[in-house]
Length: 252
Image: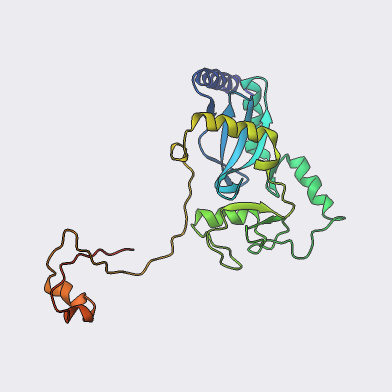
């Protein structure tokens, strides 16, 4: 590594350490790792950094969800954390919901030659082997899932169940956000700083089913209908024994 790069990393490490004197975390700009949009966040306490998907979430209870964590690592110094982050961002690959070292990725692919996936364990979009599923238990790999959510295609590609693609699930039920103790510590720290869900952006983009145009009558703040509005009223109002004072609004 040349002297200029060394100096830049040292300056960044000092700047993040200084930021963490008054903040509990530092989040890098959004980036793509193995074609997946991610956030990298460094925590002050516990001394750990983690990488989470921007688009894909994980159900931690029936009511609550959070961004799915793909990787985490403890660190001793900020310089050490930055060196690891640089390597992970440049070389790591995604395998069944985890970012793994390229050597481990190659080894797990070799395992498939003697421990093959079951016939139904293949992504319903790209047909590659995977253990990852939708909430309705249809197989969908992380790359195809991320692409679907990026395009606001949130319904299951197989059964069309509404708004399930953005929630990560895996057939062995080992979800990083639930299994890792360090993630529970991160969640505890976040809860200390965020008093309610409105303080933390959740990117809860959903497909909204269109509602039919409706006509609502009200006796409050009435107005006299114009001739055009009169024609759009239901026919039985035309023959009412008295003129309704009414108002309406269109819902979409």
